[in-house]
Length: 242
Image 1 (cartoon, helix red, strand yellow):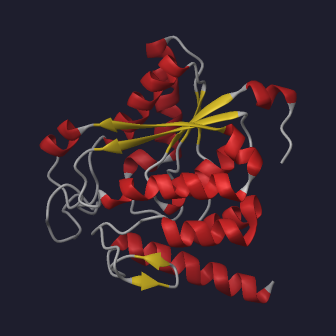
Image 2 (spheres, helix red, strand yellow; image 1 turned 30 degrees about the horizontal axis):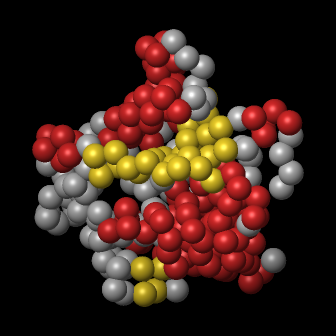
């Protein structure tokens, strides 16, 4: 996709975990900005294997599109183990995934996205980047309050006030369900991008990467796998009727 002269001079930082959503967001950013960097966070997560998937996805995106290869800049990994130390969740402990009395699943890591975006903004300041892209969504998600559109808008205001800047927080998946996220990937990079994300990205909360399913790797039973499977099946069903 050709970029406008303004877009060619703009840079973006993508919060890139190695999962389906962030991989799709990375392709989205590469289609819109002249220079794109990525940042991941090592917070001692139970599914830390997701971090190992990031390079293969970056390599795959570069191989898919020469323009994307040219636009793709450095990758950054920030250690945030203090988040693990203060959290008692199924993503930071070897605990059974369940609902809590608050009505949220115990996979919710309090403050995680707020912290991620704040550190991303600090990194963006050093890298002279204005656009920050995250894959949060409040359509197909587990009810996390820090994924809501209101939260992201409020945080954008706080970051700009607190850092005297003009950051733009982009959430291209905010109103898409998982089937529509697969469709977006197809629109951005065709079947090769869908295949890359299917094979290389990681979503499973348990960190299971030995079981291969039509929708990708995972345990098949955790909430993240269930969302991904349902989205893939709906996407394939729509594709067959197109």
